[in-house]
Image (tube, rainbow, N blue to C red; front, side):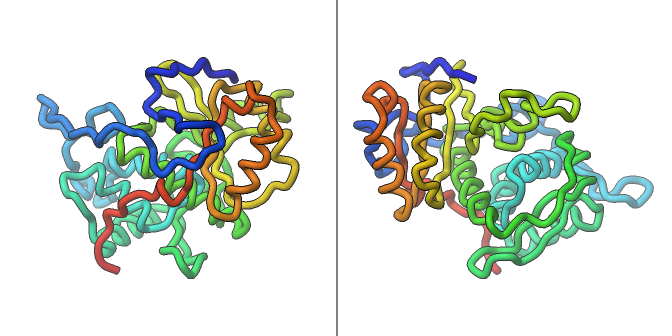
Length: 285
């Protein structure tokens, strides 16, 4: 898919030059949540949500709120997130500025008890990870098997979730404007049969902004010279691609950019992942 970049309407403004590491995103200030006339609160993704519902139904079963469903869908799209990320997302959709870790654990445990999520401490330097089960994926309309995230990819997934949370917090990209790799791959499947287009490289996300489509790549590990072919393909399909890099991949990406033609190189902007960390809104341990 090729996006027609709107150079003036894209809130993810480009840096001073292709391949340059920017110190921060040139982004607007976080939007202030507006009151809704019917007494509902806003989710931060451009739609109103009902006020809090009862925790239990008349049959004594847990009821899922709009906030539950939104966070579960977010989890399904990303693949996994840790408790600090889940708690931060929960806090942004409530009337409170923060949420305690104890409260976050209680909410997640409710989802586990209902059979929609599973959790496990996987990485020593990260909080417990949470992901959707098959029942959870079916609940939010994504489908799939669910299962424990692979240890080889979990750091990449959590890092990408941090980027998405940051862009959400600063009002640059709403949940509806972010198309995850899971959704992009699903769009390449028709009746269980992979289309010819599925052989193409799938970016980590697409950002649908003001009528344009921008690719986003979170480059955490080295791809070697394979990155050259990926960049050529991305330059042919998108008017702009954002590469998020860390210290170990910065030189890989900038060197690959130098091997592109000037026209291709102009379609890329490189950002440092350290400048895209969210403000975690979870207190306590």
